Amino acid sequence: MEDAVAVIPGFMSRTCDHIGGCTAPGSRSSGEIAPVHFFGVYDGHGGSQFERGVACYGDWTQKGRECGGITTESDCS
Image 1 (cartoon, rainbow, N blue to C red):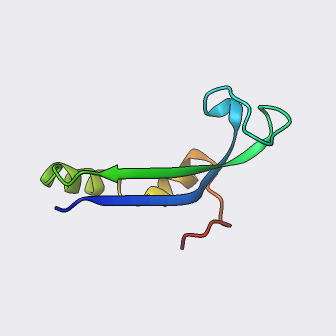
Image 2: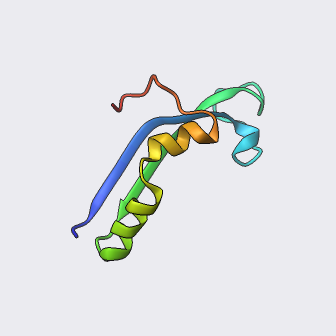
């Protein structure tokens, strides 16, 4: 497996208090809904463990929906 990168802008929409109790830049309060972005870098040394993880966890978009807040207005399809 080679090195890889994943970028999913607008992966979920959550209130900031659900993801650390912060106030997102440009937000008036921690209760305001804001987009959450996903960035991942994989160094290619995972081999079969990475493939097993993908098999176990499957579609990350579906997991986001199950967590209660994936946005459908992202740049990713």
